Amino acid sequence: MAWDFETDPEFEEKLAWMRTFVREQIMPLETLADHWRSPGGRTKFAEITAPMKDEVRRQGLWAAHLPPDMGGLGFGQVKLGLMHEILGATPYGPSIFGNNAPDSGNAELLAVGGTPEQQAQWMQPLLDGTMRSCFSMTEPGAGADPTLLSTTATRDGDEWVINGHKWFSSNASISDFLIVMVRTGDNETSAYRNYSMIIVPTKTPGVNILRDVPTMGEPDHRTGEPGGHAEILYENVRVPFDNIVGGEAGIGQGFALAQKRLGPGRIHHAMRWLGQSQRAFDLLCERALTRYTHGSILAEKQMVQDWIAESYAEMQAARLLTLQAAWKMDQLHAAGKHYSDARVEIGVIKFWGAKVLYNVIDRAIQIHGSLGYTTDLPLESMYRAARAARIYDGPDEVHKVTVARQILKRYRPSDPPREHVPTRRAAALEQFAEYLDGFAVNN
Ligand SMILES: Cc1cc2nc3c(=O)[nH]c(=O)nc-3n(C[C@H](O)[C@H](O)[C@H](O)COP(=O)(O)OP(=O)(O)OC[C@H]3O[C@@H](n4cnc5c(N)ncnc54)[C@H](O)[C@@H]3O)c2cc1C
Image 1 (tube, rainbow, N blue to C red):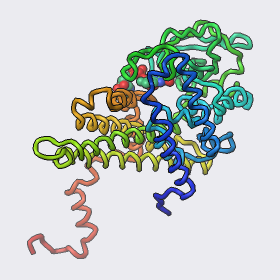
Image 2 (cartoon, helix red, strand yellow):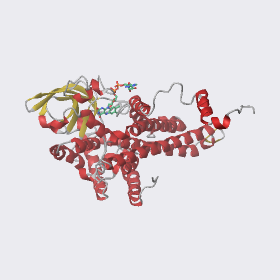
Image 3 (tube, rainbow, N blue to C red):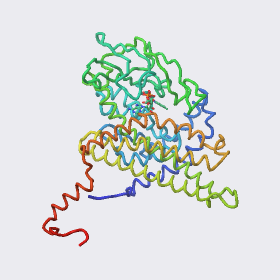
Image 4 (cartoon, rainbow, N blue to C red):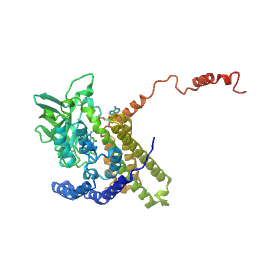
């Protein structure tokens, strides 16, 4: 078996191009964030970023997330991961490369689970960047346990009629369509087969977007700005029967399809978090070398050295864990297998990556003291955004439960404990009896 930690030189060149492009072209846009908040400002933002997107297309890096048989570039999860590490350093990176959440995940979902008609009508415009989408699953009354979701879709002739209350539907208020998780069945023995996903054009009558919920990440967010988390009432929303993802065969497949959507997304998230962590870490190290206090620069204080060593080790572990999970997914894809066989690896990077992100930004704020707490540095907004990573796409605890359950399947109860020394000693005496017969410990 080969162990290879190198990126192929051709792709390394692309990564080098991305690093420069992101740093020199995209990151400066962050400092003008207030300019992009009005409708006129958003038009300006689109004007400024259009040539950047063209350049990304020319480089052959646009919407790289799908395999070639599904209209993408076929990078696979390892290369995509390395790419997201660079793009994720700035919040604008993914959209300028045509693979921002939730559109990229929704395109992946339609690629693996949509009908050819759905792929042409909804997936292709996502890949072209001409439509925006939303994944509408969480409800005020149910999130981590999706079997409690109560939004229903009932069949009425050639239509589905949807009723329910969702929130945290990211980007709903700027979307062209929503993919809504709905209850379509009543099977008591297999609750997970009661749910399906339905494509709902956002302007359908009865889709009532109440507000974008202000959050810790964006307390002053205004409804209709990109990146909002909408609260939506679905009131007698009628869509064609064919809008169920996967067509008739997709009825009851909502959760199975959601798993396909979320696996690659978690790799991309974890690598984006590393891009953010690295940015905070760079600031931490530079400050350590710059700031003089209590008789030396901070870099000479052992406590600060501890932060640097801990942060580096945590980030390196997160990176290797994530790339190994991505590698495993690529192997599974090549073998025609389901990503669920990588659920331990994916679960681990979700909670570990989120924790590392939070820890590193926290230490970077601490070393900057009062400056770290100000909006003169990006650390405070990174910190607020990082807190959500422990909640979205499933909270830490749920991933830990998954990981622990899967790991426990590798074990059996053991009483006495497998390593119980007196029991093992008795067995060893029997095993080596022919040598030890008549031999006492203090012979
Ligand atoms: C920034 C952001 C963006 C989001 N975007 C979307 C989106 O686009 N679409 C969408 O549908 N949803 C989205 N969500 C919602 C997100 O997926 C849910 O918040 C998440 O699944 C948790 O559900 P909940 O908030 O209802 O928490 P609950 O289900 O109420 O859980 C609350 C807490 O209980 C604990 N807990 C839960 N289960 C267990 C367990 N088994 N063992 C131990 N402890 C447990 C955890 O600590 C958890 O945080 C987003 C959330 C955030 C913060």
